[in-house]
Length: 225
Image (cartoon, rainbow, N blue to C red; front, side):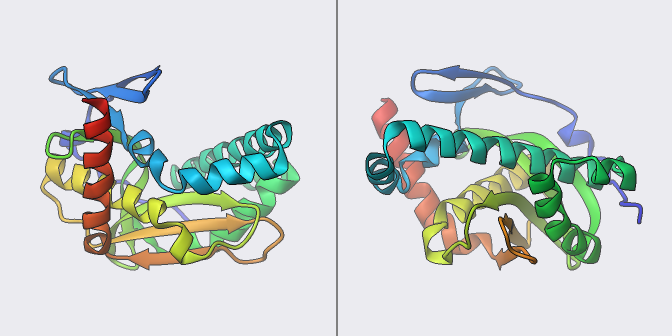
């Protein structure tokens, strides 16, 4: 299968990013410095994460977090190469077993549901929200223009506990619409889960999460001031 890519001149830019004490910041083409949406949403579940770290101990928590981060980055990279039509069967066979297992969960869903691709790993920003970030993928999913986010997890996720994923995707939708003028019809979170045979796929509308997103954006900006 060959994926088709649609080139949008409005997206022919990149953003410089730096990590500061207050989190990651991006510089927009006109020189504005905006916090990353990941930094903005880091307050979500912060208490639960701190309690978990205390419960398992700092050393173990750091080990688990580091492994999860490496796994997530690897699966992201593989999905990007696949959607760029750059992933051969031989390269798939040469993957680390856990990365291969997770990618093979996602692969059938990508082949079945993704149509025209508008951007991959694209830097985006919003002057309205005063935030920026880098979206995994914006493409047609079941015929609807969608923000698609690839995640990995060690266990099945409860939808009620991953509102930050949906808020993050909603932010990317707003950024993309602001820059291109093209409306995003839905947000999709695809989670490859360790030791499972199929991924979790959540399809939502961004409007459900706008109010929550604005709350965290304002909260972050109030603290920054």
